[in-house]
Length: 272
Image 1 (cartoon, one colour):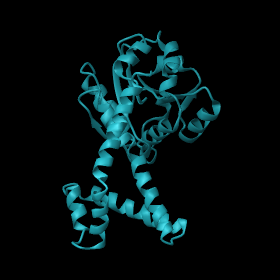
Image 2 (cartoon, helix red, strand yellow):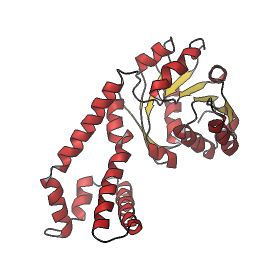
Image 3 (cartoon, one colour):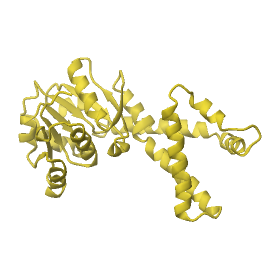
Image 4 (cartoon, one colour):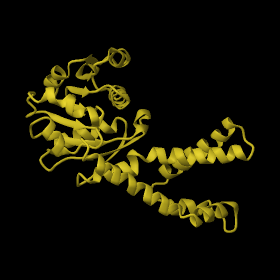
């Protein structure tokens, strides 16, 4: 990975995860800057990873080759306005803010940006993230590659051909950890109702989820349906549980939930 000067505008959990992954992979800490108005946000990054931090977004952006916008969508316009006088002509801008499309970011920064949009998810904090990326046709391969490598420091990546595909990434990966947490939460509650204490119920559920996910990862050429069928004996307990799920249209519920996530993402694009 080419060692460019990176400025993270924002110093939240996702920035911490990316910085941690980069430094662990050998990226020079002195080429990384993170900004935040609060010293309580900046100092832990500086102390733990040896990077530079500042409250001066303009200075950080001016000195950077790559600018990563990582602020809440509702704060983006306020953060971008003072940066409009920065010369972005030779800079790569990477946005990991949900709900703000390329056209709107160009408008906020009053220029045509060399821009890549990224949608990560929270397991990035463990190096197990899934990030979707989109870049307009004008972005050169070298910059696409850098953005991809940046996010590979915290997990896996995929590209979408159309910007609308970012909303589909949100439904399939960005919001997805919460789906699994909800399912596990329901399983834990029923295990407790059947007599297990809270800690044991959680252990049963989380280890089963971890094992199932690991089986998927370790068998990339095996269809998910085949993995399911392999643990489903005809007339057995698993078959009866799955019959109940199907009777209540679990697949339809999942589809509708994912479609609702996409619809909300589209609505959010109109808010900012």
